[in-house]
Each structure stands twice: as C-alpha cells, then as structure tokens.
Image (cartoon, rainbow, N blue to C red; front, side, top):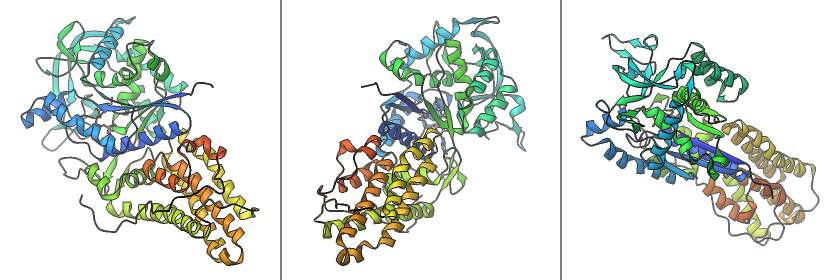
Length: 524
Ligand code: ME8
C-alpha cells in the first residue's frame, strides 16, 4: 500500500483575552470542514488550532480586570478548547504558546534567523524603534496609513487607536526579503487566496517593506518569550504566534517524523485582517531560517451580526455556544458554510438560519430520507429494496449522484465550501423532483417492482449525499448513514463507488434527522 498523502491545515491561534465569539467559531468550523473532507478523501490529515497567550493586548485586558495575563489566559484558553469540542471540530492538537515546546521552538527559530547574515548584516539586529503601534491589532503602522479623528486622535486603518512607541528593540530585516517575496508570489499564484487578498498583499509589498521591530523591553512588557541571550527583552507577539505552526509539527526537530511528514503546511486558514502577517512576515521569517514555506494562506471573510461588525463594545457578540444550543451544531455548521461564500464576508440573522435549515435540511434532505425510508419500512420488509431494470430517469439521477465526487473534490481543491454544498444540494433537489414525479406510493399496488426500484434509486442517491455531507454535518450524517444501513467502514469517499447499497440489507426504523426549526426569535 502506498503511504497516504499528508495534509496539514491550521486555524489562526486566537487571543484568549475574552471568550470565543462567532468569528472564532466560523474559522474553526470552516477549517474543520476542509480537514474532514480531506480525511474522508484518503489524506493523512493533521489539523491544528490553539490560542495565542502572549502580547500586550492580553496584559491590557488582564490589568483592567485586576488579574495577571497568565491568569486571564488560563481562564480563557479552556473556553477555546471547549468551543472546538462543542463545534465537533476534529483537531489533532490544541497548542498554547506558553507551552515549553513552543518556547523552545521560538527561541531556536530566533537564533537561526539571527545567525543568517546577508550583505546588510545579520537578519536580527538591535536598533532604536520609534513609530505607531496598535495594541488591539498588535501591529505597527506607518504614519501615512493613519487617520485623524475630530479630536486629533490617530487611528490605524482597522479603526483601532494607535500609540507612539519609542525604544531600543531587536529588528528583523524584513526589507531584505521584498524581492524574494514578490518572486514567490509570482511563482506560486495560489500562495495567497482569495485573489482579492493576494492583490492587497502584492500592492503592499511593492510599496516597500520596512524592517520589523520584534521585541519589547521587559520593563515595558513583562509577558512573552525571552529573547535568546537577552532575557531583558520578550519577543514580539507575532514572531511568537506565527511560529506555532511549526512548533506543532516538532520544530526545531526538523528530522522528526511529524515535521517531515506534515511540513510545509498545506493551508493556513485565517481571517482577512491578518493576511499580511501570514503572507509577508511569516514567509520572510521562514526564508531567513531556511525552512520551507507553507503552500497556501487563505483569508476568509468576516462575519457580521445582521450586517454589523461584531465587537464587545457594541455589545453584539454572539456566544457560539448559545447558537449551537438554539439551532443544533450541524445546523450551525451547515448554515455558515452554505450561506457565506468562502473568502467573502457574511452576516447572520435568526431568519436566515431558520430559513436555510428548514428549506435544505428539514425539507430537502430530511424529508426525502424520511419519506423514502418509511415507505421501505412499510412496504419492503424494512430491507434495502432490490432494483430491477433502470429507466432513463433512474439512470440520470444515479449519474448525477456519481458525478458529485469529482465535482466537489475540484471545488474543495479551491476551498469553495459554499459551491461544494450547492452541488450536493442540487442533486438532493433533483432526487426530490424525481421522487415526486415517479410517485412510488402510487406504484405500490400497480407495479411493486418498479416501486422498489424508485425507492432504491432514491436512497442510493441519499447515500451519496450523506457520505459527501459528513465533513459539514458529521453527527447527523452518521445517523442518516446508520438508517441507510451503511457500515462505518463504507463511509469514505472511496466507498461511494465501491460500495453501493446492497439489496436485502436490513434497515433500522427511520427517524427524523433534522427537526423543523420553529420561527421564534433567538436570544442574541
Ligand atoms: O488575530 N469573523 O487572534 P484573534 C470572522 N492571535 N473571523 C474573525 C472575526 C469575525 N468577526 N473576528 C476575528 C489573532 N476573526 C491572532 C492570530 S495566528 C498566528 C495569530 C478571526 O483572536 C481572525 O481573523 O483576534 C483570526 O483569523 C481569528 O479569528 C483569531 O482572531
């Protein structure tokens, strides 16, 4: 047997300075869908997520609450871990940046970069820093990027306040990597996706890169990883955070099994606000350290509550757990993946969730499964019916079902999660039209053999859809596949063609998989 192809995918690591919000949940869900899809498609998948414990923002939030940054992180990190669990995420690791393995990894990376010397000198050097910093973004901004409000206060392009910083720090010679980065983007057009983000990054890098301040004096910020050889400085939180992706696969042990198997990562899934860090700073750091670059950085869009940006100050942060308790985990997973074109912004409202869940899940797939399986329970001795000769309509539907895998595989190659779901539901709709037009209930008396064939074709199509929908709705599709009598080992994508439903297999009593949602406003 040939070794399965590896696929390493990551989410951003969230700041545990508050409880997780729906934006974090969205990233977790969509990344999990890709991870599960690849796993079912035969890849050896590693999916990593976690939290970004350090940084000034953590210290600031903690101080406001009268606790330490460590206490804040220890209180919030478990909430992020719990979110992964209640969203049914299949992550293989949950990293915290305060872990020893990560400290070791960051310090090794730092030393390696510092040892790299170009014509201008080593890639890490000490210099005086002065400039604007946004604590909320944990990012530096150039004067030309800022805007002034009526009171003369300065703001970053993201709308967050900036403060003047002036100190002696360590720098990373980012400017030396401008040409190599541009060359990399050119050679690997898929490195930054979607294309709108790629264009933004290209324009940014072409304007010229400045060296980056990558440390803070402990007297100013006493929360972070020691700079090797100079414990009076801590590393800039982004230097530390980005490194998590290699820590998780065993860095600095580049000869380890995990590192050799999974690095370079296949995809970093992140939000659009942090594409610059992942597509400019991170690859430059890796180039300086002589480590291969990840294959793809995908910046998904932002979720807004009824079109408004979510923030704690506006008070419209939706607790993901409340959403899951209100609508059901698979319903929420499905809603966000189907409703929001992946890579674009999206919004959420009670009405849109109820409509989507009722139309697609309760009606389209749920009802079809329930109606066909109930007829089988009553009229076919609760066994997979035997099919006789196939009509053109039967063949057409089965062909559409069989064509799904190559179609959705192609769509998921580009992370078009919404298109993949649209494709599956197109076939589910076709199956509904087929079922209605074939009227198997009317064939019961006149032509029972034909009725059996129609029921077979219907549930065989449902089987295709159920297997393909597992990445998005793992628990519900497992129940549906149980009802179709599909053994667990026959639920991979490979089994779609290899193991069609077999006549005579006994089926359990059918139960509804997706209850209709009642149209009452949820608390939000
Ligand atoms: O940026 N909709 O952490 P974070 C969709 N620690 N996605 C959203 C969102 C929204 N409304 N709000 C935030 C950080 N996100 C750093 C990452 S990675 C080495 C370090 C996304 O907690 C955001 O874009 O602010 C990011 O990908 C993730 O949630 C964590 O955001």
